[in-house]
Structure formats: C-alpha cells, structure tokens
Amino acid sequence: MPSITALVFLTIFFVGSIATLFRNPIYGILLYEFLYFMNPNARWWYRDLPDLRFAYITGIVLILGYIFRNGQFRENKIFDAPQFKWLAAMTVIVILALFWAV
Image (cartoon, rainbow, N blue to C red; front, side):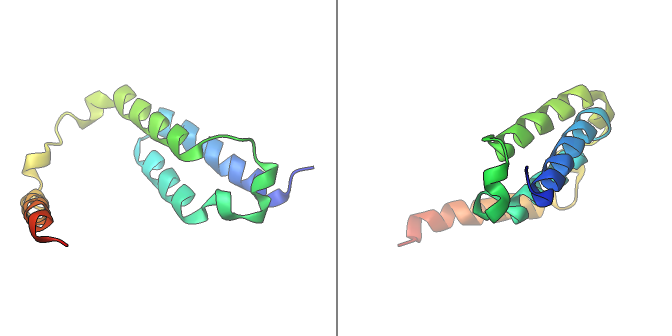
C-alpha cells in the first residue's frame, strides 16, 4: 500500500495538471515550483510513486495549457512590461561577463 504522503503528492500533481489545462496556466508554474521544492526523487516515499518524469510532464502540460488559452494572453506584450528593460540589461551583462569569466 502506498504511503499517504505519496498519495497526497500524486493528488496535488494531477489536480494541478488538470487546473493548468482547464483553468489557467499559472497553476502549471505553481506546480513546477511545488515539484522543485518537494524534490520527490530524494524522499523516502518516492519508491511508492510510479516511475514518471514529473517535471517533464509538468512542462508539457504547461505548454499545452498556454496553447489552449492563447487568446486570453494576446493583450499582454512582453515589451510593455517595465521590468523587461532590466531583464534585457541583465542578460547583456551576463553574456558580456562570459568572456571574462574564469
């Protein structure tokens, strides 16, 4: 019999996947963070889980959820976000630092 922890993990995983597909893709991002911080591969209850690549499945579900809801995000332009200029500047700094890094 699987442990209660493994059952709760699987429940959260499947409910999060369904919410990503049918509600909003933000649930996929939250699910991925949940997987990252839980790190089921390093837990004692991992042997009770099916041998699945949970992060990969979450990524695919997240992409599908975005594709299904693509019309909902047409008005959001990345270049209109005020943080984008700082993200672009940081990316340039990191790329330039690659040439001088040890």
